[in-house]
Image 1 (tube, rainbow, N blue to C red):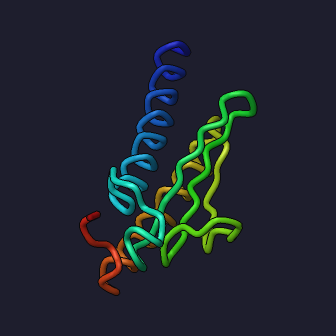
Image 2 (cartoon, one colour):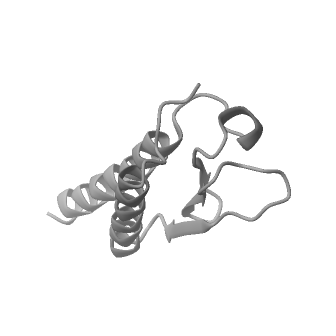
Length: 108
């Protein structure tokens, strides 16, 4: 019984991490996304650090520029379902906000 619950919890956390990556890709697309190429389109970075067990999504609202800090950082421990769920909610809200503002568009 414990193994089944542990596997179910593990699957839920993996699904949440996959959702964070999907949201970052939805915001960013797959093309080059620096400001000099795409103008003011938002740029998203997804970082997975397995050695410490956390994920981070960084958002540059007006495109990525060298030596500039991101406008938003959302991070979570990979072993905390609650933190992952919160990170997913934050990124979903940010994505919805940028879409209603017309900022999320197709990459060139």
